[in-house]
Length: 368
Image 1 (cartoon, helix red, strand yellow):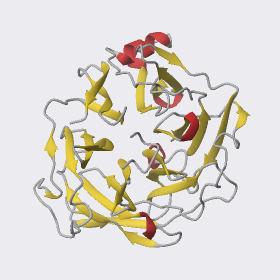
Image 2 (tube, one colour):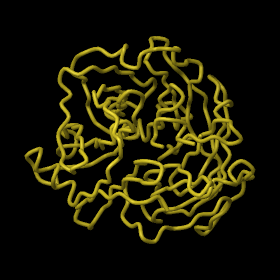
Image 3 (tube, rainbow, N blue to C red):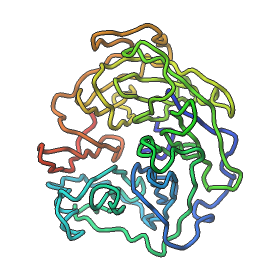
Image 4 (tube, rainbow, N blue to C red):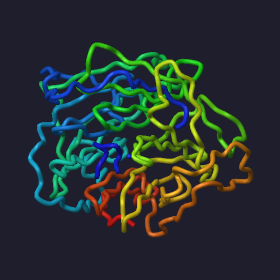
């Protein structure tokens, strides 16, 4: 159950457009035009229908839809076990691992192939690269010359020289005919999540302003960006579950996110401060739903979603690094995980920081 659906069984500070929907019967590739996308950076990834890959361009404050042409269904998804992935990607690109940054990974739910968004080089001159990993573990660069693509520029993005530009897009997901994008804007309520209907149209999009209560900080906030999020259904209604730095977990019913509205998300957990969520998936095991979230300082958390619908909102300070609301188990065997995506109903693919010097491995695990 990868990120293509309501992530997948189904926030805080974000903006969302719910007014536009996908045209019934629209061919997913019909709106794409052939050319070379002016991608300035390659950040968060998410797959849509028919092998369409969405790439968040933080430098360009834009979303690209790329036709990978990778639509052949896999009879069985093969596990990825790749040592020194960054070194192999660097060698393929004619450089060394210190000049490579792997920004995100996404599994194509049709073919089972894995895609990486990569920066070749460091600083403002870094070049965006899209890399595909086949089942044999070998990387190859995906040419972006003369491909079918579409582009949607994000409104009210931080200026190119503003500090917030690097967080204009922090996560991306596709669900229910729309691409959801978390990040920062240049507005007073700067943290937002916007939704763009796919295929892209000329109707545009705007959104609601949303704030959350951050227990570790003891206040309502409107400027901290979502770090990672999933879409999820509670009592068959679509919600968003979003995680922020330090680490509140927030739910927000999609039905409340109307253009021009001001909505307060419900903080259903404080999971410990001095921590940054890195990535999150939702899955089912033994008839129950769980979030699996990796973090900068608190390992990989397995969070039962059973109480998400009835959890009371946290509205008072949670001090001293304390925890409140939904509980979690730490998966002690998983260390150094920086990115993840679901491979199939029983497995996930992990990008693991194997050592402090930068070596990264790909691993496939059975979901805990």
